[in-house]
Length: 169
Image 1: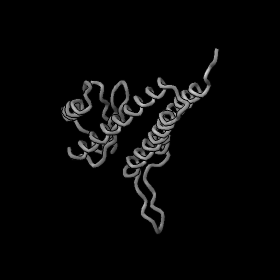
Image 2 (image 1 turned 45 degrees about the vertical axis):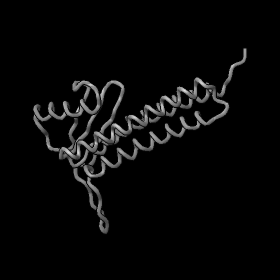
Image 3 (image 1 turned 120 degrees about the vertical axis):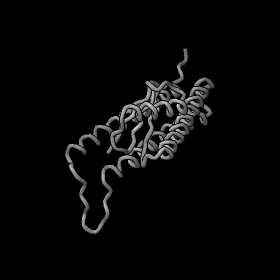
Image 4 (image 1 turned 180 degrees about the vertical axis):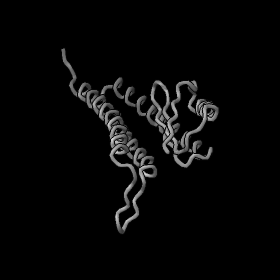
């Protein structure tokens, strides 16, 4: 019985990269909370303009999300282009690549919709069990929350109960 180690190692690398990405995003959330607890107000160094935490959270999160996704897509592309990869692994990698690309497109659409609805900033995180949305706004009431969830549910094609909206002031 011959065991091909290369597809197994590639599979382990994919799972490891995805796990590292999830861990990194989870660790990012913890770091943000720790920063919020440690720093009550932003500091502005002499001679330079510093962004407040509010202004820097959204771009930083998007950058981190983009880094993780780029790594995932790069690994999947390597699997697809590798002549030694069996056809089943290539198909699986291609399906995952399409899923990630589709998720990225939907997140961009929803983030654009949030801006069109008047939110200065917004980040969308689509997961298998639903979606999390972080918007920069003052606290809004339950009716506004329900309206936004209904609108987002239509775009995301999920039930509004699967959407969690968090606001960052």
